[in-house]
Image 1 (cartoon, rainbow, N blue to C red):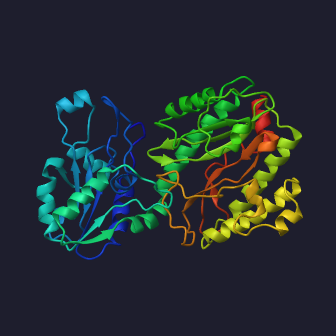
Image 2 (image 1 turned 60 degrees about the vertical axis):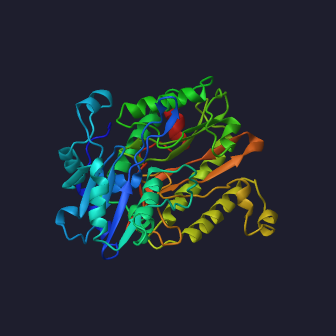
Image 3 (image 1 turned 180 degrees about the vertical axis):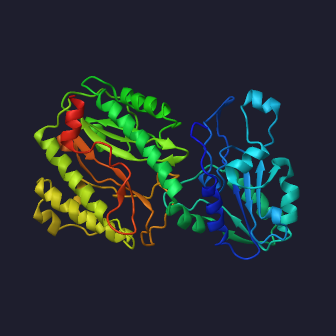
Length: 430
C-alpha cells in the first residue's frame, strides 16, 4: 500500500458500532472483492470492497471477515480468513498479510487461512440463528457482474437454508455516512493531495496544451504524495466539452479564450476527495465568463450554509434551486415568464443546471447515506452547483467537500484550494 498505516482503533470502533445493531444470535459475513480479469493473463488493479475495509482495514484479495458477537467461543466473536502467504507468493506477488500483521492492521486476534473457512463456518453456523449477508443497495448501484460477495452469499444460503437471513447494508448505510475523526483526517489528506495537483496545473496550463496532458500532471502529483490513483475517472473538459456532464475522453486541445472544467480528486487510503474548478486556458476570464463563474460561486457558498444537522435532502435541493433561479435571472439566461410557467417536476433553472448539488462522500466518491433521513453532524458532502451554456461554448462547475458540524456552517475540507476568480488568474499569471 502507498498510504501510511491507519490506527486500528478506527476499525475496532466500526466493528463495535456494527455488532451493536445486529440481532441476537446472529453473525455477519463480509468478503473482499475479486481481482477482475481483462484478457489473457491481464487483470484490473485490485480495489478492496469498501465494507470489509471499513470494518477491518484489510486491503487485499481473498479475505473474509466474520462477526458473531454472541458466539459461545470468545475467539470466534471476530474472525478473519486470509489467503495463506508463503515464500513463493512473496517472490511472485509481493508480501501478503501474515496473521501477526493482520492483527496489527485490524485488531482482530483470530485469523485463519482461507482453507479453514468451510470447517469453521460449519461450527459457528450451528451456533447462530440469523446470518447477515452483504448486498449492494446504494441508490446509484448498477451491478451486472457477479461479485465474490454474491457467490459467497449463494453458497451460504444453499449450504444453510434453515437460517434466517438479514441485510447488512441498511446498518452500513447509516454507520458509514457519519464519519469518525480518523476518517475525516484521511479525507482531508486526499483533499490536500488534490490541492497540490491543482496548484501544479495552474502553473502548467496555457493555450495549446492537451486535456490528457493536464490529466497527466494531476496523476504525477497524486502518485508523488502516496495516492495510488484518481478517486474517480477524471474530467478535463475544455470549451464546449464542459457541457457534457460526464465527459471523460480528455483528448482535445485547449484553445485560447476557452475555459477548462476540471472535476478531479485524489484518493488516499481508499478515501475519496472530489473537487471541481473551472479555469481560463489563457489565464484570464472574459467579462461574461467571470460573471457566470461568480454566480456559480455565490450559489455554492450559500448552498453550503444550508448543510446543517436535521436538514432534509429534498428540501435542501429545493432551496438550492431557488438560489440558482435568482442567479440565472440575473444572468438573463431565463426570465420571469420561464419561472412563472415552469413545470414543477423540471423547474426552469434545470435548463442550465440539471444535476444535483451534493452527495455523500467518503470511502466511495458517491458514498453511503440514506437520502430519506435527516443530515447529521460529521457527514461529509460535496457542494457542486454548475451553469452550462452550450450556446456560449462553456460550462462552469465549482465543487468543494465539506463536513457538517454540530453547530454553525460546515467545515470546508478544500478551504485552501484556490477558488476565487481573481486568485486563479493571479496564480496562472505569476
